[in-house]
Image (cartoon, rainbow, N blue to C red; front, top):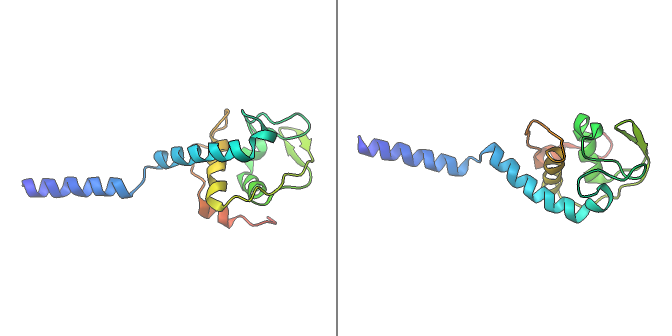
Length: 137
């Protein structure tokens, strides 16, 4: 009986070690995303994602970000040119392609989707999802 209990306990420990907790994975992704945001995005979108009125769109409480995350992924992955509407205002400045890999794009998306009053219901954006987003969607 003791051997069975030890075997079961060992199996549970092994499984918990190799199967990441969704929240833990999201938290780690957000931490990496915060660093990426600080290095690449903060100059235009500001420290709290508030953007710059009539120049750079806000990311905090952004309807564009929350309603069309694939378009936000596309903008981060490939850059953005042309007008977009965010929270009822039009923005028409170019955003250069930051040169991030798919995991970095996922990490920064996870950070901005879950910061400054944004809530994505704690759904994790993955590098595979980012890879599925094409330049001309």
